[in-house]
Length: 310
Image (cartoon, rainbow, N blue to C red; front, side, top):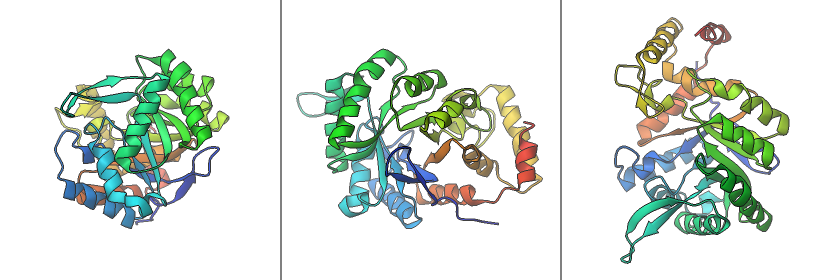
């Protein structure tokens, strides 16, 4: 049975913003791992809109600005006003004397926040952005908290951004951000999945207590939960055999219920009361429609209870 849950709207804490339960991450549209033609990228954006998706996430890092540019072009001014868009700050794209990209650099200073946001808005063709995530500040925690966040808070007051978040794949620093700043949202990747529920130890309960929204990325743990075979990736490295065996065991159990592993993986985070939205990427219309189909497959409660044993 299919129930259309993917376009349900949910609020971002302490804002007027709404996001759909399923959002579209645009890293693949910027050419992550494999190049994507512009026409294919724009077709994905069109299909997402047609399917009722109203949350789009991007970043300068994705294709060195390409994903932002394509998202801006694909949405256009009118459609951008009726969806929620998030981008990220913390990396600057450095160009040489001929205007060609020469390198990217981390920058969590106040000036870096202003420059990154101005350049992102230019690529997105927008006057403001809904959500600004401080991107991967793992090696610069103090600078991100003491310089990047206060400057984004000023931009929030100025109306340049509506909500502030951190986008990260480790729990400890995310917890520190929730404790030490007035974040609206945390985008946590790979830490609340069928194979890794470590975010539920402290981050998710704390976010719920402090009214901070949680967006979950990396639901397939970079590949293993999409196709658990030898050579599959887990957290962007080759997966240990014991994790592959565990994922295979989950897949085999799910077959008894006629539930695809990908469906359980994409739906699992939404069962937590602290989770607002799940982000998945797609490099083609077929990948997007597969994600939507998986998100909408009805999974019996008895199946979820059986999954708890894995």
